[in-house]
Length: 232
Image (cartoon, rainbow, N blue to C red):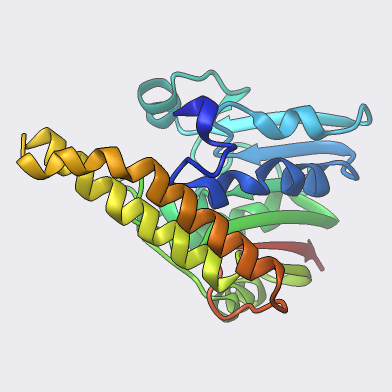
């Protein structure tokens, strides 16, 4: 499915559609020491300019057992192994929902950032449980603003990702695909309907994309949020 993730045949096409563009927009202007918390394969590194120094941090069990990756540093996002005021920018991309104490993580990021440093944060909103059982939270933009204020950050930039039709298509595609996979695993005769899945997903994705393209922006039902917070 990896080769298909950038095509509308993939059930999570919308989740991947703007991934590279968003990463480039978030990283291309960063310089100095950039800390990527929950870095997995370190993909943001390829979008950073030469003036940036990349440092990837991940939890030991997550990196070694789930992703089979080797970060620059093993550590806990809720207890960062860095001194105060030492990091220029932090990336926290689709990580905060997996932390049992998210406010503690945000306080730690505030501590290690230099004054005027930035935190680029992305979290899912309307998206299924993933990486279970380590999936604890969902935020609205209002909840994120409150979290930023509690931690002492100023919200510098705010973006919703996903038109309501795209979010609806994404959720429906994941739900139907999971149901069919369950049928296959159980050897249910209904598994024959898996033959209909690719054209169904393709049609739903294309229709949702077209409706979104012809509609005004609407932030009522995104599948994700991305914000930039600045340390005051």
